[in-house]
Length: 125
Image (cartoon, rainbow, N blue to C red; front, top):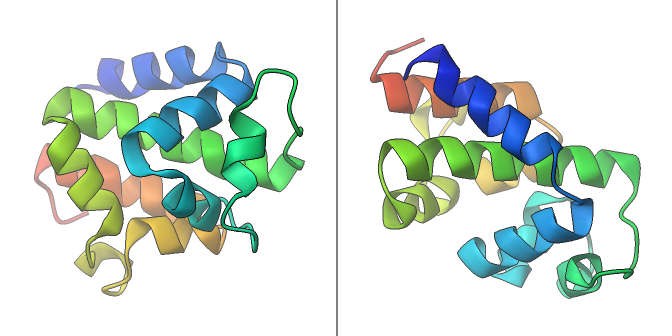
């Protein structure tokens, strides 16, 4: 993946309101998975975050949501939406066979972004 794709994904993501980020992730991954990857105990939390003027997620939650959305943009751009969804929920050897969504829920943002980059580039790094 050229560096521009990663930078472009970051720029698009940064310009979005956090409620829009949550709404888009809910649309792509489903609200239960989004709540889990954000580290929320309430599986319906992402519904509240997705409403304009709704609940404002905590900073750590926002970081996880933005990281997930950035990775979504990267993988769906390089592949397609179906591959991106499968990537988020499947066991990942670069994450110790843990699903990227669960790793994000644990706050392992840098590892997940690195795993997504390696997947797109087809490298073992």
